[in-house]
Length: 322
Image (tube, rainbow, N blue to C red):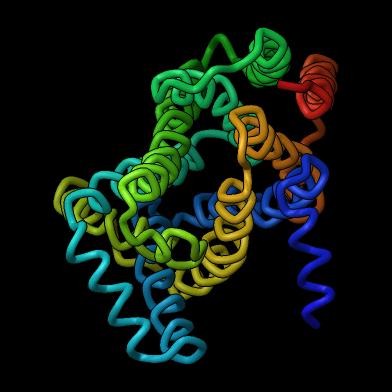
């Protein structure tokens, strides 16, 4: 068993390993776009698609910590949250609360595959976020990411209806804002770990991916309270409770944990960018899923070209060296 662990550990910082883990996360992340779209088509309110996920995540992780690590460990996690309440509230509000509420809102106005494709703009956003935190990125990364952005633009043009621009904007602008929130919140956690290492402070809790997901979720709680009093959400149906529970398990627990695990093992700026880039896989997973389960129409020629350009940019990005 130790030998297997040693073999895995020897690959954890390699580009191929990070790429595989990131794409696995993308597969499970796709559940977010598909199920949220299904909930919207069924008349469910976007607020409960987000807030119920918050409740489920806290419940799932709390039970998991207690069963697998013990009550003392769970108390230590809660102590981390209390002792650093301000940090986790800021990081959680931005990285989980704003990000996910905006994605849920966008699902009311755009098909799942369009939201998933538009979400790839986070690759551009990540460049600005990493630059904001002083990270140096090569010119090739900027160029390849721009190619991906062109693909995203083509997909949105294919979905454009000049006679009905409001749904397009309401489906695009929230995702644009969310694309900055997600990498910013995650980078705050990454920087916090680095700061604790530099100051010789205890950072063990930040090595546990599940703890980070739990704390980011818990930190977003104040935002959801505010949203409750500022929306016109109706009582969720039984099917919405069930669907949100499923998306929480697949996306909130499995996908987010895999993604943060890969990000935690990225030891250079280029590898961080690579992990973020794997989210482009969601475009194709979402398209296939929507065609199979939601009876969506096939993209037109412009949409297909946009998809090809997007994946070409991803391939080029994964082959780039720092």
